[in-house]
Image 1: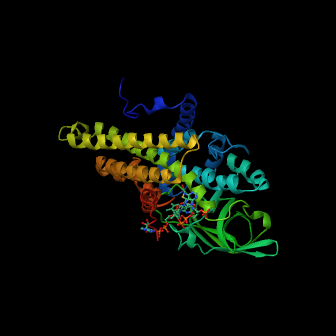
Image 2: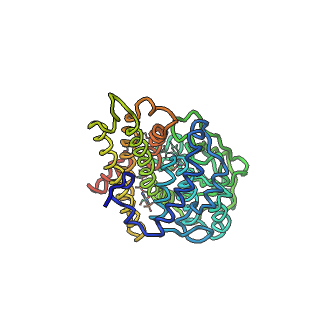
Image 3: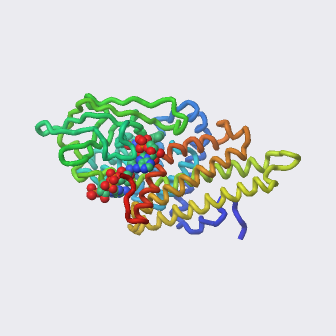
Length: 387
Ligand code: TGC
Ligand code: FAD
């Protein structure tokens, strides 16, 4: 058995032929379409709108959902896809996560048959883009404190409020907006052209630059009765969607980490200091070994959670443990890799600082590391420490 640096533990052998085939197709797309351009997109703070259509044609938008133009792939195959996408950039994985795991999942899980027919095929193909508005300026970790309200006016609903930090917001054709009503927190489908609904993109980000992040403004937006997601009746509605996206991040973070390890390994073998490659020094080898431990352990963890999810046995607290562990591990790997690259590590000529900066968003969104530590702590002790 020969050791392969990019798959030290031969995790490949734990995958089925179909899983490997899906992984390879996504990897080829990413290598061809994203990697050559991503540094420029990041620097310019853009991501091409047409990428959504290309990802739809690839079959990865809502790929883990059944019917309505979705591929019905396994959770493990979806996870492997997230890993390959995030090996390119967290922004590209974010686009796919928000589309498939948040916007499409919300409609698939909580929507009416008419809503599914109307939106899911267009979202699966990437013809339409969706976003998911839960966070507000004063309600992030505690979405139950949201102020956005929806009130009845005859058969219609009137929405008023503001959502903040919304991925895909400025380019979305439909926003899933969560709002407080007299009957608890409910979800609404808000088409882009609805009067009173506007978006404003957030600039000056130093992280997730190849991703659209926006504010959603709802100024007495009037919606018909059938804009309501009928099956979601409490905070459980949006939180169940977050489980899906967090699961993708458990895998995705290992993609970013693997890319950093590969970059650091290659660099260390080429970079000469004191007359020898830095890869030949004990200090740098210890760092590389430490990074390989994190990448292999985290990928095995993701695969284990994927198998549990495919068996219908994955608990939200286990997803929290995975997100906490793997994003922290990826950040550690990225920061270590950045140091191995020396001064070159601060430029966009190499992927490392881009991943490192992106991971600062990844550790914050979809529940901060603190939130997931408290979820795990609550499950361990039986005592909730949030309030
Ligand atoms: P709590 O009282 O615990 O629960 C309220 C209701 O929700 C249920 N529940 C869950 N259901 C499914 N999955 C979960 N993970 C759930 N967690 C709780 C719970 O059973 C209860 O149901 P019911 O039927 O009794 O009503 O709620 P809490 O207010 O104490 O909050 C708990 C807490 C802090 C864990 C939760 O609020 C939380 O997860 N906060 C973090 C918020 C967050 O993650 N926001 C993410 C926004 S979206 C985003 O960041 C997208 S970035 C994507 C990208 O670009 O990739
Ligand atoms: P806060 O909740 O204000 O937290 C600030 C600090 O306090 C954190 O360190 C936190 O861990 C800590 N803290 C909070 N509560 C406790 C506690 N009880 N005990 C101890 N410490 C605590 N949201 C969406 O709805 N949709 C999106 O598409 C979306 N995309 C995003 C994209 C990007 C690039 C970013 C950066 C964010 C995005 N978000 C999105 C928002 C994201 O989910 C929130 O930023 C996140 O939930 C944290 O909320 P906050 O920023 O308000 O931080």
